[in-house]
Amino acid sequence: MTVPGAGHEVVRAMKTKLCLSLLALVLASSAAGAADLEKALAGRWRGSWVVLEVDVRSDCGGLYTNNRLNGRRVAGSGSWTFAAGELAQIDKVDLHRARIDLKLTLAEPVRTSWQDGPFTLYRQASCRVELETELPREAVAGGDVAAVELALNEALERYDAREQAQASQVWNQRQVDPYPEDYDATLAEHARWKAEQANAAVRERLVQAEAETDRVADRIESDTDYVAGFADGVERARGIGWPTCDGLVHGGVDAFVFRTSGATKTDAQRRHDRGFEDGQRLVVALELRQRLPGCFVGAP
Figure 1 (cartoon, helix red, strand yellow):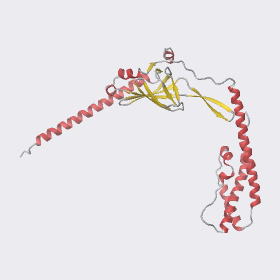
Figure 2 (cartoon, rainbow, N blue to C red):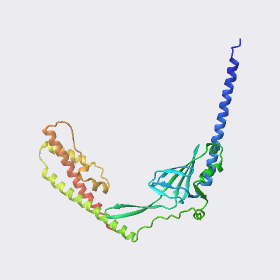
Figure 3 (cartoon, one colour):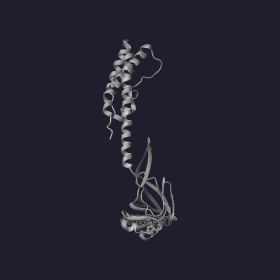
Figure 4 (cartoon, rainbow, N blue to C red):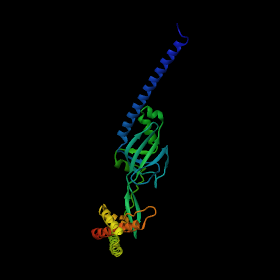
């Protein structure tokens, strides 16, 4: 007995299976084409030099700053703006379904400045840009190197060597601002000032530690609960892991003392807690008096 329509269902299922197979084949072919295209583009562009024909922005902080490129229109939000004509080297090429990302480092850094006390200091910061360029999907799917490079060439010129790029009429010839005259002398003065500041902080902590030793000695009680707490505080302070000089100087005695807390306490508990804190303070103060002299630095 033949079920009406059964043959049509079989044919429909076979057609569906065939379509899915063809779709998988097309997708696999497209993926392979894109992979080959990325390899080809990376081989030509990675390590090459370019002269940008559009403005770009960068934070100049070590990371690549995004710049979206559509034709000759660029959208970026970096702290520094660089006019068209910048020289750069391509570090990496990333291809997507409808976009190519060029990660590049500008050939010339920028000079940044900051204030430290009475001194204005400078450094040179490297600037990196990620140029994200929209592409026709069919160009990527078809592995069309020429079409991709045509899109890129709207915004930049590519060269195999830096000298060739520098011969371009588009190159803006920007150079990083030089350091001020006698900047080495400024750095030397700054180093001496920093040493003086550091040693003044060490001396201040030493004075505090000596004063804390005297205060604890004057507060010591003979009460049994206080003495028991004092012994517990000494034991706890002996287990402290002492930091480097920065931690010793910026912390002081209070940074290493553990204070108990809780609800209403009896008089005996309060006396124990006073002893517990004083025992810690004495050990910490004595340790600081021993360790801090090693934190003095010599002036350059």
